[in-house]
Image (cartoon, rainbow over all chains, first blue to last red; front, side, top):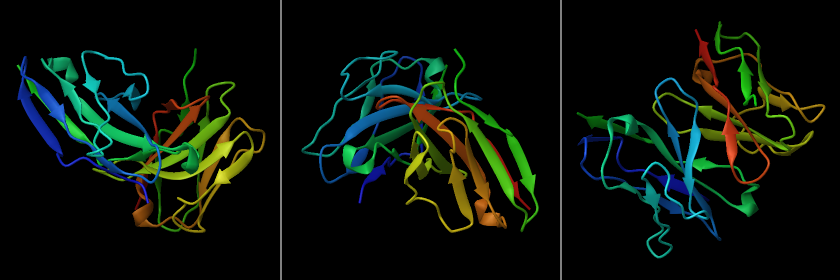
Length: 110
Length: 111
């Protein structure tokens, strides 16, 4: 069975401080990993995916297959980063359906 | 262009009523997904369509839940004899490849 775990429900950091959101997964096969973000009163949207290996809004995430992790990092948090963040995985064997973690709320304080 | 739209945005139903939730995907998107998001949790997969074919309905919680996409575009999720535990946000997403585009969701409250 595939599973995604986000151990932190809430992360509170000050503006300019680094932020790291943890994500661990279990999946039999080669998963595709994603981070989705939901800003206040907006719809869920893709932030980044591991296959693109790009940085979006200063965020990066590295897939560590040995530790089955896909942690999201940003060196200098901004107030506009305050949002709900969901880690998700999919796989061809699962028909590309997404399995989400429980989400982490990030609050960036001024 | 227009994104995924869902209607109604909010629905209040009395326990035992039937409800129908609509999803208009992005034009040309072959794949369509329904998810259920309970309060304080991440979205959970319900069902998946490729064009008009329902290829996976393993996430539907009971036989009271039924989804269709008869012409391979608009989809409807129907819940019969609603129960309080059905209260949640129902999300629809469409895709051409790996990236899924989500609608705003329908918040269903069952009293």
